[in-house]
Length: 181
Ligand SMILES: Cc1cc2nc3c(=O)[nH]c(=O)nc-3n(C[C@H](O)[C@H](O)[C@H](O)COP(=O)(O)O)c2cc1C
Image 1 (cartoon, rainbow, N blue to C red):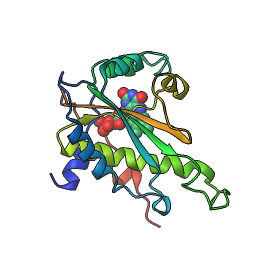
Image 2 (cartoon, rainbow, N blue to C red):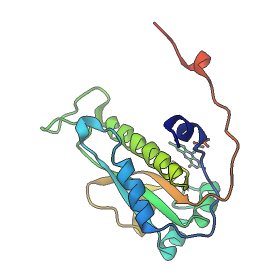
Image 3 (cartoon, rainbow, N blue to C red):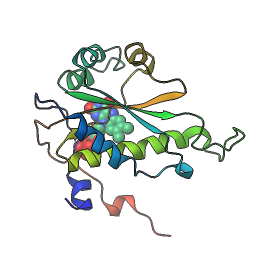
């Protein structure tokens, strides 16, 4: 699959086949996502993948999704889920701990976002579907899955073999998005 096709054909997948994803394949996807760019190559993204059924069903509740039922339904049908975290205090920071720019600590989420999209594109190329979920409650998730000290949760990303082929949600084109100066 060429890059443009991958970018255009990746869709958010919210329904998965009842089929386990081999850990070796998930490892391959993470090894591709590791090529995502990051602030000063700090590589702060970390990938905690839950494929244990008990833990997955414990996470699939409205407390963890900030009350958003749609995400509970997605999680209930997912054979695995990535808890994408980032190591705090490096991206966007100087060695003395001060912020490098006026964006302060927001480069951390920027880096995590690039890592998320790179992960999703790599998964798509390998025949896997993903959906980035922003509706989650970090504290509730932490009650179920231990997140290492010094890491924060950036997104939840259910992953599995797609059971749907969604239409492309409408996209704006360059006539609306682009300004030349
Ligand atoms: C930061 C972010 C948060 C998102 N949060 C959710 C979410 O909580 N639940 C969900 O079903 N989709 C979520 N999405 C998926 C978007 O709805 C989806 O990307 C958008 O509708 C475009 O569809 P596509 O990904 O198929 O192109 C999120 C996407 C992003 C980038």
